[in-house]
Length: 285
Image (cartoon, rainbow, N blue to C red):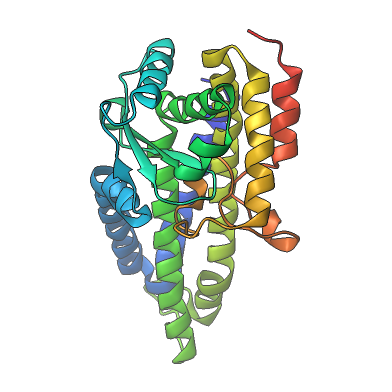
């Protein structure tokens, strides 16, 4: 197991532990059980239906080989090199260039491109982007990031419950350990969401670096992906992707939401400059 993979599983374990902790702080053993059931239910829904939900939310439309033979041909060739079945291909009717992959496993995967990315990138740059998304599929990053996002979402939901509880007076800890009192509610309402965001960010950043390296291995051209990332970064600074949300931002190859300063510290993506530097340090494979 690679260092990045080990770090990812440790971070997922911390997210799971955090959701159980805040459940216990709010409601003791009963709250812990409720938090666990909520996490399992949300993970089940995200595992089976996350691809359909996110594709629908972006307005993506599936493109058949007859309508985009060159795009499908490129995807088939890259998938063969990556040792994967060819994914379904979708196009998002947005002019801002970006792309993402989704699906619970390689057999049920899909890669979505915005109309903008198909228009502005060269063939070599687009291959680098497509290989990056196929790398996420091969490395099982989609499932991992979906679990992380779901656990983080559950923590945010429980934190909102804690805020209401604290606002209406909270409760005292009794001898049976039913929750953590007012202090527990404050921790759950304020500290837990920040911790969840930082952990989800760390999971996503680790997987992005790994996907970049895997993409370079697939295409044997690190510079093509580096060039694509530079152009996508410049475009993202000018305009946010309208169909992207904070819940789905981690899925895209570059952060689709504009923002700088303090906001960049909480980005689910590593700095583009660092990603480019690592790619340029790789020799052509």
